[in-house]
Length: 192
Length: 192
DNA sequence: CGAGCGCTTGATTGAGTTCAAAAATCGTGG
DNA sequence: CCACGATTTTTGAACTCAATCAAGCGCTCG
Image (cartoon, rainbow over all chains, first blue to last red; front, side):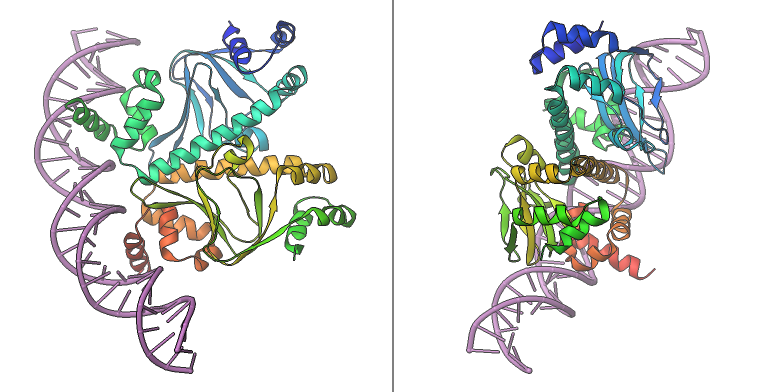
């Protein structure tokens, strides 16, 4: 059940089986059905999540009622509302399940234990934050400088398998396009 | 000279004058003229900077040769290429001076000293990273959901004094507009 | 099996770009 | 301090990418 998480740690850090067995009793697996909402705007995010199977997403709803997807989190991805989590402020976006999903939910006290049992994990998680920052910077620049077609091509290049699982309208929302426009872009690309 | 930095610390942390005097000999003030480049794409960023007076900026140059401004850093702001700094990877963007500027340049070893002398500074700097992440998220959402006019209004609301110091074309670059478009937006707003 | 959702296609509109050129401002050297 | 060249800003006109509005199709799932 939680093996994907252990595999994740094994391939990225030097961890012993003893360390992993110490972590095991502290881990809480949660299951949610497609469409279920895990965090609403205005609530305080209490934990960061690691997806074991399925897929979560975070998104905002703008003043005109349109959704804009911030992040997808398929297997082996982390997702949380970092600001809310670290500062205990109300969340700026929603998190929900776009497939039936099982995930590990980790509150700050678990993370402290993780860092105690696997000291290497702390700098690793700090790196993860930096990576997240980088990906937002890249996306911002892409939004500032590239056409819809270029952004779509970059997306399927970066997330080839994920792109196959997602409905068109969600990819469009992530890329800042309407579903109609993305449909036309695809058609255009299909005919060379 | 370095008083602005000490004031910055005094207003945000609980620091004694003794602690500050311990920091003083470790601080390096640098001066640069308008237009001078501090970091180029591909170089490794060695330090994070705190602006004492003047203004720095970071930006990328896209495949069509157009500049896109990532961040402005006037007095009391930090600027660095975080990814390059933390991971020792080549920088993704440029940093240069848009006014004659004096700033403190802090390498990792200085930061270690800072955290030793003022322990409260470490979580504070972590918070700063989270804040940076939040601001990029906000900007991305703004880019995905708002018109040029809305983004401009939000910009002058958020940075009213900075907006007066910056040339129009730089604000346009930051907002993802051409100078022509921003000029028209201003004209439109001026006539109510 | 039908209602709703997601995707496609068409026609039209519109925000913002591009290209061009004039007007205003800035900075620097004489 | 003024003059001149360079840069920045403004304005105009044509164009373009993507949004909007509208309709129809196909699938799923309740």
